[in-house]
Length: 260
Image (cartoon, rainbow, N blue to C red; front, side, top):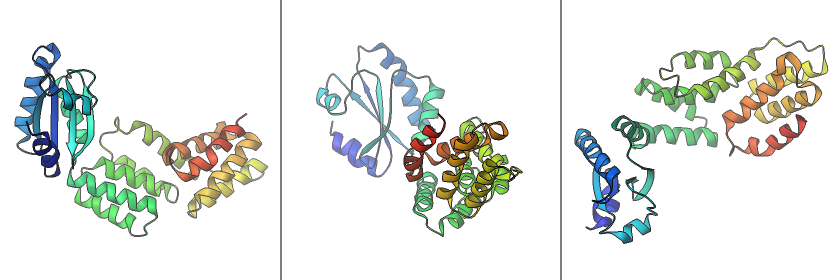
């Protein structure tokens, strides 16, 4: 077979799913008909290529095949997803739904990158995206994450429209936790209350660095205040921002130290 032509080059036009198998492999015999059936049902939205790992050992070595069946998805010449083992049909379909590229996914990814870069037009583009793709829970979740610090009430309204709540359960919990903090009626009579009130104001004014810094100061003063509100809010903030966010990198260790 011409792997470069049938897989690498072809994947630049349409996603290609490669099934590494062997005639002696029992699980391969189980998986083969299932993935072939799914390829037929796909009607050209992706293509299936089967590679006999015994006959093409160099390909198995090149792509790190340690066990079979091994399935890899190629898009634009690169492996973008993979699994090993004989999965049932519904699990393979779930995998395909998650990783198959689409115009919708690529557009949302572009908008997300613009939001991260601070593009002032990105939020408007996201609003248009949700109108164009009203079934996109991913779009609604991105919208809620993007606005929760400045407008927690509207973020809650967006979350109510998310259909697949189980899929986004963890992030929805974090968003609710952050919204609870931002909307909390906090007395500023105490030192910790003053810090939390100032943190709320900083987040609303699009100054998340001051917001998280003030939250950590509040944790240092009294982390148990209002049922550990400052600790819970800080944890939710870091989880929503993600480990690679610059504020997480800068302040997470400082927060951890404040807890002890």
